[in-house]
Image 1 (cartoon, rainbow, N blue to C red):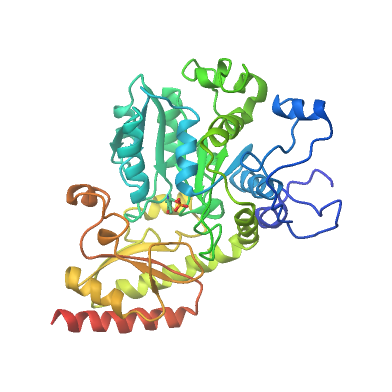
Image 2: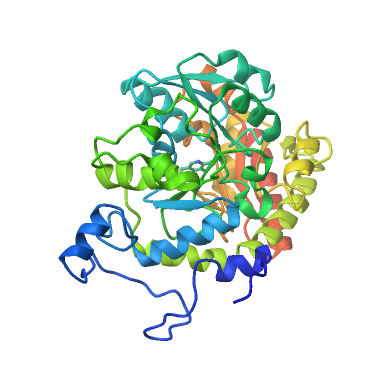
Length: 431
Ligand SMILES: *Cc1c(COP(=O)(O)O)cnc(C)c1O
């Protein structure tokens, strides 16, 4: 094919795949195999030496996952990607690829609840200290950096506070400190925001959410921006001979995709958080319609946010898509196509009214997922953020009356009808 640079919509459908040369299969084949036959003993040795690229064992690589990885790298604008067993695995791998005991991470305090616990408990147990900062002022990241800090971490749009990060300002802080910025882009997806274009170095996504799009599979992916100079003296794991991989020097050997290679052969290979090829297939299916689904998710969410904003039973609505949101300007800058479809609101009558609301919806499903074609509703204080104490919940933006919704792809009028009837019931419960 010519060297035309294809548009985002085309890449959603084609990046990383052409018809299978052996079978002519147009769709992405599911390579449900554990291992791959070598051509010869020499061929096997060269694969194990990382001298030739090829398949060895599905824990480390798989052709179906390879399509998903290449497509994600193209969509995020990075050099390479690595598919992993979940979003949690993707973010843990993104950190372990460059951090060891004694290092420090500076992270936004407004995070997915599971991520907060992963950092606050699990990383600390490994001797990696984490400093949480309020991300609304990018200078807070700078103030928390020490000579042991090896990365900054934040979410494009955070859950459930809905704050939008000033990615360029935080990327500048990271660059000046000689450390990478890792961004969790799950709520935006590369369709709404491409953090690497704004200076981020590594992007992680929970593919479980909008990338899958149908609430069927758990998975994650990390994307190497290929734009970080690992030879600045702070990352010997990238520049010194590897103990786990017979003396290979990842940055020298693989250049601007050395980070992704080290993540694959030193972390995924030994920790084993591999993604199933079948799930990779479902994620490539999801990606084919990501652009169309995100447009509809965003437009319906905005209409529902406006409806709730005017509703007498609603105390407040927190959605960056609304002009009165403190994050509206940042949202327009970083997500010009729409502010996503996940947001929170407070129902009048506090926790009791909130519970009645959740018990009364007929179309919205009460569960803890987001980014599904189906509309979802949840009460963060008693579910996703339950492990946090009250003070931590407050700093993450979770109050007792907070209700979170993820607006799906159903008929908009049906969703508004459902919330309206449930809100009416919630107010009767209060009285
Ligand atoms: C769901 C989610 C995760 C974790 O992903 P899993 O696929 O559930 O492991 C991480 N970050 C954000 C923002 C999420 O929404």
